[in-house]
Length: 123
Image 1 (tube, rainbow, N blue to C red):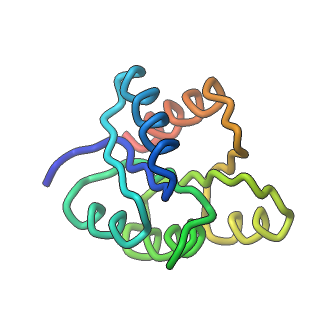
Image 2 (cartoon, one colour):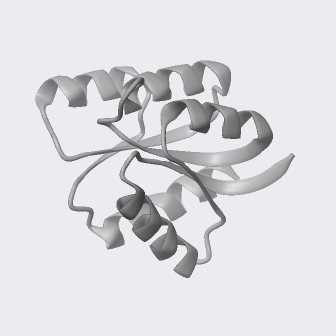
Image 3 (cartoon, helix red, strand yellow):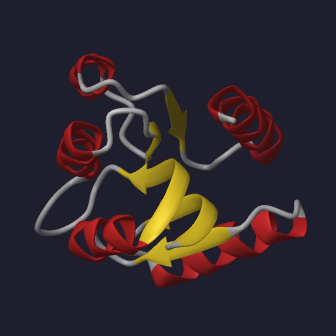
């Protein structure tokens, strides 16, 4: 089983590539998935410390992915990224066990700080 620090999930290929590149520059091990189904397959094959998922994706949104992943992997830390920061999404995210919610456009400094904190706590 491969060890990866972070699994990024977003259906926007450009955004996914940009975020992966920025995290790799910070020396994180990063895997990517373009949808929730691929993410679940990767979680079966790789040991991941942190799942970072976009909210709005086809087939299964980020909250649904988070719920399924946290049931299957109870210790998994999940961050949600959303361009639509509505109170009902925030409430559902909190109830789903999501550790942090970030709005687009991302503040990379805040994201990197939160990632380091989450991965240190999980170690």
